[in-house]
Image (tube, rainbow, N blue to C red; front, side, top):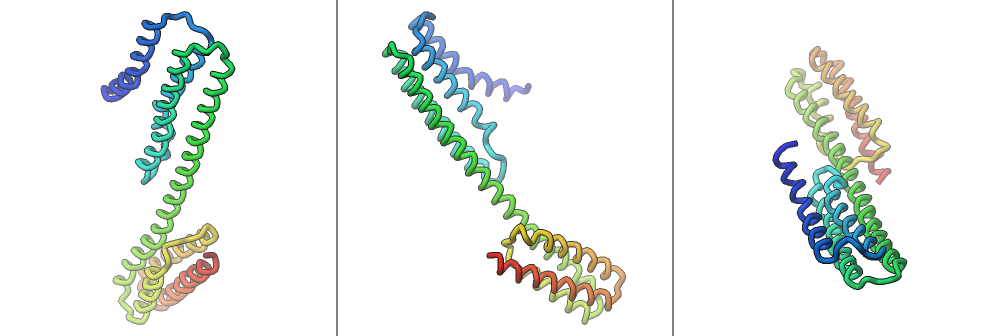
Length: 226
């Protein structure tokens, strides 16, 4: 365990130590059930604040995800602290009222927390999908761009350039139904690269034409799917 981790643990324990010191020094150790219920829920609320970093979805928007979850956790903690202290000071006789209020507060908190986590998951998945979509056009375009300069035959070169222009003009947005076709396009680019290395103008032309047809078909299907 490094020094930074130790410091974070100490920081996390500050509230627990101060709260418990005040609680037991001021009011002792003998308390009715309603007080212990509030005591337990205050600690639960604080524990959720400490655990919040572990619930944050990793991704480009981790800071945004963290802010939304911390907003819920910290808000619940302060509300619970106020409500819990009121119950502790008021010493209510009916523990059921205290328990119901605490369960409702915890339930609302968990609903908001889980709802935000679900929303964060959806956003992160959309970001990952977007990155994959961008990679398709970027990687395919880069691979074809490199091949254009390697073709000596002018007729074959124009065919490769046509495929390159088509891929660069392709919409970045994609669709799960097109993943198979996009994988085939990547495979076809690899096959075209093999043809370019042999300097066989006829094979290069044939494979460039086939690649162009696949790119156009992908773009055509994309229009139908959106």
